[in-house]
Length: 484
Image (cartoon, rainbow, N blue to C red; front, side, top):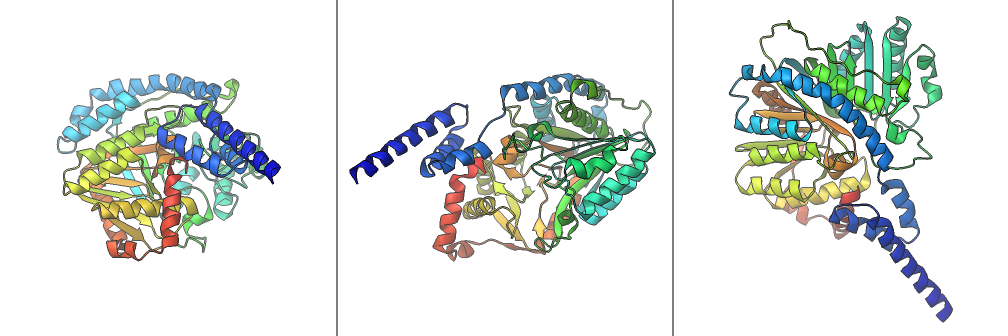
């Protein structure tokens, strides 16, 4: 027995030393460091397998590759910025108040993202309607179609997308598709062959180029962007797959938020796609950086100023999280949030609690069903904690809520791919449109209000009735929240 004891003791010591060495090799925030130490020490051997899957950082070479494309593309953003500086005085002062100006400056300094004023924005909350519009726009394309999605499934909707693209490829339209290999299991090279045989180019985003040799959960391309002919763009929460058009019985109705944008912001989204494409493909297949805002523009009765902000693990600034925190801190009346996942870091959590304690109407809406068990339990933990602090937390019951929306004071709103969780803040490549427009903000508020009819308010009594086992799962998942 003593021999077995000493063998186990030595293995535990070796495992602990290995865990400390493994985790401290990379610079991380303290909460993430402790979370990984917990996993590696409590799950000997198995924990290291989990770490290989979900804990490894991006190599310095890959980060330099992305940053190099950012440096090349940013010159075009700066060109847009200089040109728009002369136009921004045309923005309504009611919308471009002190808070808006501060947010604009925040993103100019952190992401060098210009606010582009000449836009028309249409909001989609239903997948069938969104994809019907997208397919109409694809069918009308004359020059190019650039598509970037986290998920493109090999299912009915995915094949429908491919058929529309094949027809345009036959007509000589330039087609480029970028997708995440981990998020699009089943979308193989063989499945894309009919499209690529027609001259289209299809690639998996660089961080997932070889799914099995570069096997990692983190650093996914979570963006959803479509740009067509320098004229039309889409961005938001919908991916491409049957579940996103409410065809999956597991989820039922899929409630999401997506934008169709025409106007100057198309150029900002085009540059973002080119950055991601050029970081993925060989040099000879890279696209030139070029933007061209028209001197003479269509006169619209109403325009929406939009600032497109991207963030990812290639930067430590966490621009989108800073934008959310700034919105929350600047609120004087209301903060309404929708997100499928609610796993904020301490900065965002404290900002929400401070706003609620200051008497601001803080509401957070989350789904009432899981799609990822650990994240769902962590979401429940933070929903309980925020409820106790005075935040109104609503559980959406009419299917699955996947919208990523923030609305402040009915004046400023954001829609994009970033969830309200640590993964979106710093582990994934995300993109969000911040809009300085009362009309759009109030449209999103009206949508939120209609969603309340399908939701219930979490109460202290409901929390007290939760079982000890459920409470334990929530607390344990919360310990892992920095790495979920």
